[in-house]
Image (cartoon, rainbow, N blue to C red; front, top):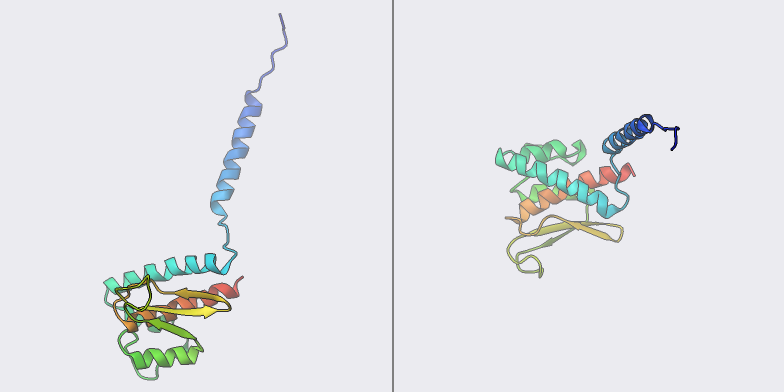
Length: 154
């Protein structure tokens, strides 16, 4: 028989504590997206979520105006959701290159409008099936602004 008894309870408690600390650190540290597509996915979720919030409140035009830089805003109070001339002026002031698909012109978008922009060789767009061209282009502006800000931080 052996008389030497080894107590592993202290080592076990220490290992459990270390694993809890490591788990807490990993929860607090977000993994930053590294590719333009990953960054756009985060931006898309954020912007579309806010878009839906303001749409429920019927305050989309105010939301768009608040997100625009001052140099891109219209001089007089404007409708940034329904007025295509105002939206076009904003796109020009921002230097955006925009593509718009009407309903039925894209195989994956047979029921609504789609607007998009490109950055380098990557193309990014609004969700398919937007109600109007103006809505698609207004959301596209917001996506572009947020995406450009996110890409500056990379």
